[in-house]
Length: 93
Image (cartoon, rainbow, N blue to C red):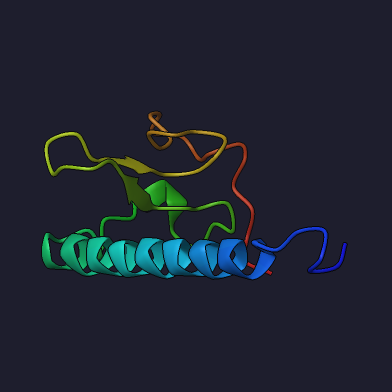
């Protein structure tokens, strides 16, 4: 499609680029705010059955401190609840 058929092509392109830049700035500000609210705390909270396991995820999800939940792994989202060893434990490769 050439510019004779679609004269507003460049304007549309620049408008989309400006919208993307605005979105990127907002995401950057949200990331900074989350880090200031403690979303990147790296306190050692790995459960004992998960030490050395390759399946460990350990990332907290949620938009507020009250609603934030840590996902331990895909097999056991809240961690292995038994005193025995985890049947899905896999050593780090």
